[in-house]
Amino acid sequence: MLKGIEIHNFRGIREGSINGFRQVTIFIGKNGSGKSTILEAIYLASACVEPYDIINKDFKANYIIMRRGGRGDWRSSGDILWYQMDSSKPLKINLYINNESYSFHVFRKPHSNDIENVIGLVYGDFYANIRGAWKKWATISPIPDILRNKLRDLEMFLKPVVLVDGRLLLNPKEIENTTWTSVSAKRLDKKIVEMIREELEREAEGLTYLPFGNTYTLALQTLKTTIRIDDLGAGAKDAILISLIILGLKPKILLLEEPESHMHPLGLYTFTKFLIRLAGEYGFQVIVSTHSNDFINIVRKVSQEIGVESRIIYIERSLDGVINYRDFSPDNVEILGKLGIDVRMSHVF
Image 1 (cartoon, rainbow, N blue to C red):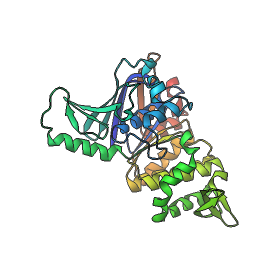
Image 2 (image 1 turned 120 degrees about the vertical axis):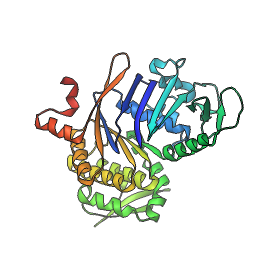
Image 3 (image 1 turned 60 degrees about the horizontal axis):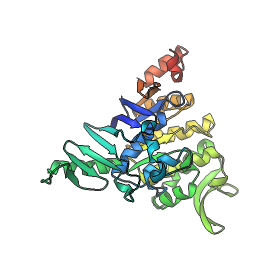
Image 4 (image 1 turned 135 degrees about the vertical axis):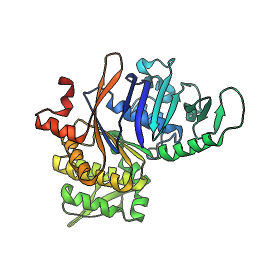
């Protein structure tokens, strides 16, 4: 399990560390506090073992650069990944996984065609590039088996890391192409339909893949008709697509940005309950950024019901780019609520 992270000179974060991650970890905080940047840092570190996003097929660094505004790529705009765009300073992301610490370093090579080698893993005197073997910094020497095993273990943990944001959910075709065969082959689509029927689309009967024009699209079968998922309400569509990603890709870590977008509280409750239950069933870790008090309370309630550990972490970022945090257990959140204190407003108190 990912237990914590330390960040140096990445985007708006000059430095900071956060510990206490649980199976379900929720980041809250004011706009610009660094919540999304923390998700991006985990996603970028995973590029060391899998450089390309499995859904959109782009290099992960490119996706991070483009996802907020749709402009630039690594070669033209890579400097924006550095704090104050100063790529002369080291960009480091340390992940604390189980009882190990791994240090990922990002290197600026703006004129290199070898985009796969912009991030490497440093461990003592040794260095491993993406999908590469361990190498010693200065001299060639036999590599201990323990290092090979560490790299193999790390690959198994970080390869299935998925970032789900609003930009990805606007491209249902890529999600369908990547996940539908696996989901339908095992009839896991039945799980999705049960969830959708509960609140989001009460007349749902099944999911199917149909030709529309010169392409194919996923569609929801109801009692009276069949509707392309593109034409569903945004909340129902997003719930289906996120569920496809989980069931089709079986991620070790699901990074989820503002899942409350477009969802009515009742629909959000249905989807969040489904998400937490899947996390408990499949054992993956969910790391979420949110502004929704409804989402926080739903996670608190459901995680306690099914025995999944959760934690709410309030993020603050100083004017000079240092992040600090306060973490709250579900019980803490409940107590604060009884006192009339909204946990999202922790900075006021």
